[in-house]
Amino acid sequence: MKNLLNTLYITSPDRYLSLDGENVVVWEERKEIARLPLHNLERIMAFGSAGASPALMEKCVTENRELVFFSRSGKFMARVEGEICGNVLLRREQYRTADNAEKSLLTAKSMIAAKLYNCRWTLERTIRDHSIRVDTDAFTQKSAYLKTASESALAASDKDSLRGIEGEAASVYFSVFNDMILQQKDDFNFTVRSRRPPLDKVNAMLSFAHSLCTSMCCSALESVGLDSYVGFLHTDRPGRRSLALDLVEEFRAPLCDRFVLTCINKRIITKDAFIEQENGAVLLTDDGRREFLKNWQLRKDDEITHPFLKEKVKWGLVPYVQALLLARYLRGDLDGYPPFLWK
View 1 (cartoon, rainbow, N blue to C red):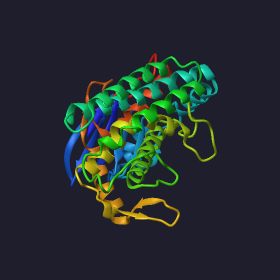
View 2: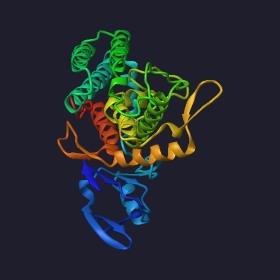
View 3: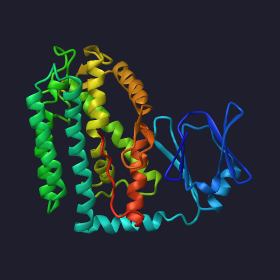
View 4: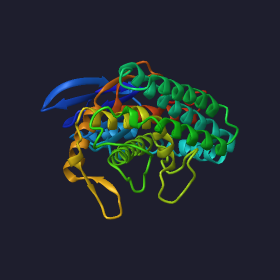
């Protein structure tokens, strides 16, 4: 349970929410475990909870407070909200920003600069933790390139040049990705990023992790009232959640890529967890996927200090915090969107 940005997060399953006077009461196995004043909260986000009392739902509706429900895995399920909650105004501002080349570029630059910053610090962490086992000169050189690329992203004059900077920097980052695989080298080898379909075991796990994280971003954006289909860098396309693809860029290296490396280097996932199809695609087996998901859930429970809030937050909540910050920026409560900068 965590209170951030006037939002109460219920992250433990099987907790029930009720109303007692002006307080939200959290129950577990019929025992009261927490009590918080409702007037201090703008929204409540419940992950895998046992539900909420009709009285609390009515109170949230009456006072225009959001009550949002997710599955245990983080999939957006439903939102209880009042007749006027600001979501229409927020989405209209989102659409205006997306249609404004200058405004949408500002947010896109922040997200991509953050992505490259996080890629850089992924390499720096490898230098720090495994200096004896990797070519530190090569890693330092790539890190310096990513630092310059991140600065160039912030100075990009248009989205095409921003995409070009991102593409070149991604090639530099992935050029040393195989060197970060320190165990099971005979079974896990990375040469180039392949997505549709993934053509080796490492790409299979990267694609799966990125897909899981994108789903988290979709749920996060929907939970604060944003339209996950209308992005600032990724263009509109039927069926594509463009804003979620924008947001997930900040988490690819520090959350997804490092998790995949952990699975390999700690032998959590082995070669037996994969199957190769006739078209060359390499996919996780059912057992492999279950093991991957089990450890993904554990990683989401790890705590970090959020760089903007300066508070302890579980990894699984970081996309929701960023979605809230993005919404506050679009509403005008923040002068700029503060992207997630991991270090």
